[in-house]
Amino acid sequence: MKTEKNILVAFLLNVAFSFLELFGGFFTGSVAIISDAVHDLGDAISIGISYFLEKKSKRNPDNLYTYGYIRYSILGALITTLILIGGSLFVITGAIKRIMNPVEIHYDGMILFAIFGTLINFLAAYFTREGDSLNQKAVNLHMLEDVLGWMVVLIGAILMKFTNISLIDAMMSIGISIFIFIHAFSNFKDILDLFLERIPREVSLEEIKKHLLKIKGVEDVHHLHIWSIDGHNHYGTLHVVTKEKDTENLKKEIREELKEHQIGHVTIELETEKETCESQECKINTEIEVGHHHHHH
Image 1: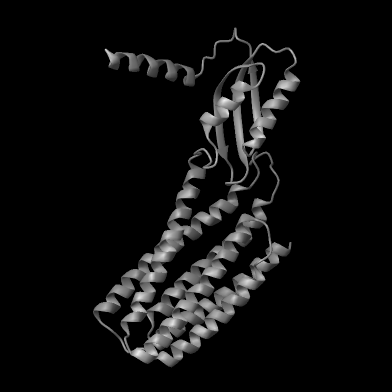
Image 2: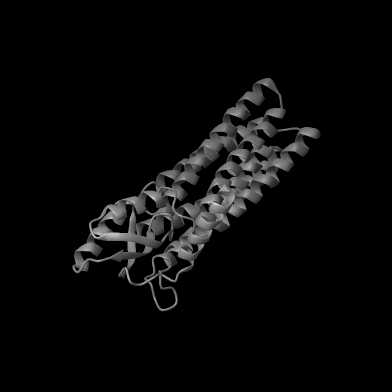
């Protein structure tokens, strides 16, 4: 519950503040402040989405969602990520236009705003520092990034006050946006991997197969599928060919081996050697073999 309350507080703080910032950006004429506003608003939206989806993602599996609702929180991450990618591109184009046609900037207003921004985001980061869910960690990371973003703006504003080089503003804006973009893009790739059922990054199929074949009684392993539901809970299914009579022990060993590879949910199908597996996998493998031989000649 604590997590959810924290997220809500952070959300309200951020939304209120983002609008204030947009106003401040137009008022001081600073695109760096506007780019931070986009950043903050993106974060706020994502926190809002996380808040509702985090609640939903805790629901237990039912007849409709047999794996549970865990992926709802990933959906939240996806939406946010896309918003941030869009926002950062939008801001970069704005900053480039600004470099072409410079505008008068109110440095003092900008400095005040940046001090205020640093403080508010620091408070929000402080509020969201506890909590264990991935979402909560992500929220906290966003908050810390916002603090850093504002510190950059503050330093830049002070520099501009003394040097009067207004180009610094647009440069900061581009820097912040590129940072957001790179970050969001790598998140996007991770989320895509989940939706496309790619094998989790820390798991190697070859390794697992090798270890499974070492278990006493395991003659062969095929149809090994590993996927992740949310980046933390990994699932696996496999067919095991065995002559063992005591399969209870065998299954236990297989489960333990897979647990070591962070795969907690395992479904094992045991087969005797007489059963030829009619699966696609076996067919594909033999065809590839045959294909290879042709190439050698």
